[in-house]
Image (cartoon, rainbow, N blue to C red):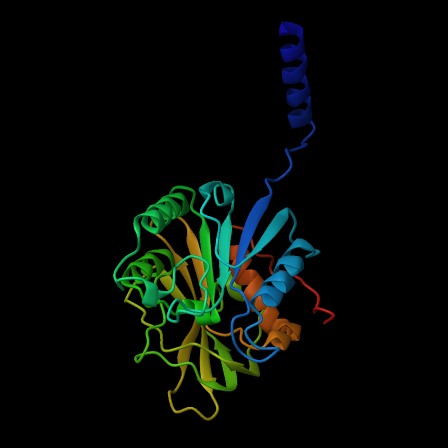
Length: 287
């Protein structure tokens, strides 16, 4: 046994002496897709959207060491599913309606609007502890930015620094011009301003917080709400990160290079991955 250990130590020393480093640790990204519970084909395609983004990250030619998993429907309550992930990406419906599913939060009409049953409460407390202890990134897209239950709102504020609030916020389906703000931020590497049609959740509730960096300012062509924060990055006190984007309604928008690059950059950054100078390289889906 002593001889075996000595040989192992000598081998490691040899590797170090010739400049060979250990392989980089794989970053695991967990995608939580709500089921397709409403809308016409091509819109609110949560699973299809996230599978495209997962495949884009796994096959990127300039970012390596990413593994992904897509779960559709309610998230598993077994916290071991989350223990080794670097980021959680959520695209789904809100919790507002009894017939729509958010992966983490039960429909608000089934609750007392301020909290959850004991099992759900225990699960969310455990997940929150994992997110903070392991600095797990949180990414929230489109309709999933809207939560009604006050406990869910508290988690979103802690995890991402903001949320969409009914009555105050807006979500025009329009032609949007997307301008970049704070374009030195890693999430915007390689992204250029773009114009496209989308339903963009916007006019978010965003507390004044120096840890939030506004990234994209969207202006709708017809709606009279003026320029709005459409995407932001957030650096939590625990060291974890978040990325939020209010668009992602029409599935075919993923063929747009700047739109797709914004999303894959944001997910990778939230997972703690260094973003290359020109952004994460991906190819347009063949769909």
